[in-house]
Image 1 (cartoon, helix red, strand yellow):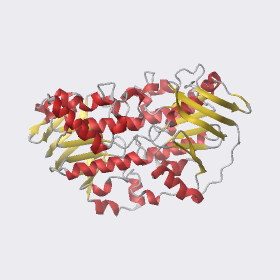
Image 2: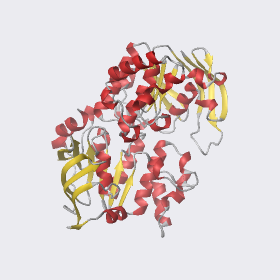
Image 3: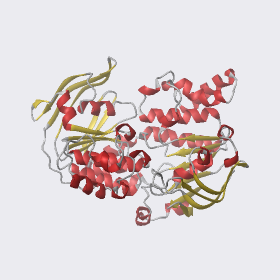
Image 4: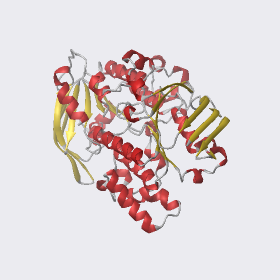
Length: 485
């Protein structure tokens, strides 16, 4: 059982983090599945940190009231003791990794609790079998895709066999097949009588089996829904609440009349390798300014590697790349391209949000920086350090940098990870504006975002292009089949 009694929390430096939560009274019963939803920064992650003891043991601030886990007051219980019956899967799996190989990472938690080696091994085999992760056994964690890392993070918690599972946006880096697997994992936990608390923006895969859905707004629990009551919300109500769709079958591409400069960028018979092992073979396509090309495919198919190659960041390849029918060499592509990485922490360097927008630009246009920050609703945060922003705010900052630098090829790797409906719409609108002056590629598993934003979809499968279609209502069935099945 999880209990919150008159709990309020604000971080030590309220300008450096979310505003916390206020006046939380909540009881989550043993074996219950609770979904936390609401706009970015509403307090979902803070609630999870209060449950697993990261608040107050790691994140300092002003805490009033009490949180109890299985009768233990979290503020008075060491985290190593709490971890025996509470397991957490974080939004960014790399923040919870301690090893460089999959096998060691999965057994790490139970190993630290002194579980016998024979038990470790039997649990390990059971975990791989139950979660269907045999193909990840023995792999180097640094060579896994983002979605594969998320699976390993879940497996490491499952191997510990806690009574309570806390999941912070577990679907954010997963492809459609992996999200189906995640849904099956959650059903497995419910069948085992586990208590599950999920904080999510992508609601379509999990709302219907939640026993309760808690809607948070400005750090407060504003509403509590049953799944039936939640389903009865109109689209207008849901969007006003800042929530993503709950029925993907209702999502359709709009009618578009897109004109673009064809064949500006040409890729011919591109074969991409990593450590002399072929990843992609005979990739050929052309693209032009005005297009927003969604690059889809299962986790680990080489989507990010392909786009890193287009940007000149990956150089182990053969084939031809042309720009305006002229050779487009690696150094040229580096200068004329900009990539917003899946983990934006790798590309934030400056001391403030405002300085980040002009970082590395000798003659940064200050007016353009201010206008961009205002469009992305980051102007009030311009003096904040980038590392103090929420995940969604960091994503928007990276998008802001891409707008300021005015490159001709823009690549976005999963730009909607961690974004609520409003932020997703903002990013969609910005990409459509940027497409007037650049060729845009977007790695995405987000069908709702794909339909709203992209003009074309290229799907990778088994090292090749399996589908290259315009995103329109005429191709909706093929798009849905390609990205969701």
